[in-house]
Length: 239
View (cartoon, helix red, strand yellow):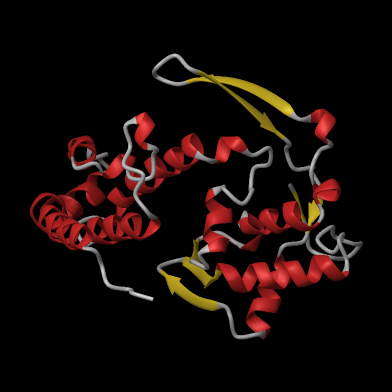
């Protein structure tokens, strides 16, 4: 397996590193102090194609792979970390536009969290707790959809129109609102040495491999499909 960057990716690194050093880094502290949203920087990132990396070519995007997406995020972060949110949010929309709408469940194989599990990426939770980890819903859908999702007869239907006027029909089975105990999986990750903890200012950060969490949740739900539904005395969050 060849892990080397392609010539195109090497050129992208040089271009974005220069852009981040010249256009973002000199103004980063000012943006943080004033709370200003750097619209001009976002427009520049759009002109560089960074806001359409994961969007399908049919919609004006670049159909870039996840490695290229990671390169862009890393290089922009060298100049201003907050500007990476523009890249992430725009390309999340690209994922939904291109692939995710084909599935009926929110956390399917083609959803952003499903792709994260497939590629065994890392999850970094900054200032949030385990009850916000959407990846666990992905395993619920795979192992016990009838227990955690609304029935197919209750699916919602949306009619969406793209910029060319084409209509796209989207069906969605939402997750049931249940007393879920996601914290049990944090304890499991910690017990197996898979959880990394750090403090940044007043926020606790948690990091772990997506594959490790998927394995633990899969094993747990295979043994007992309703294991996520809290029993009396357990921690839970209605969601």
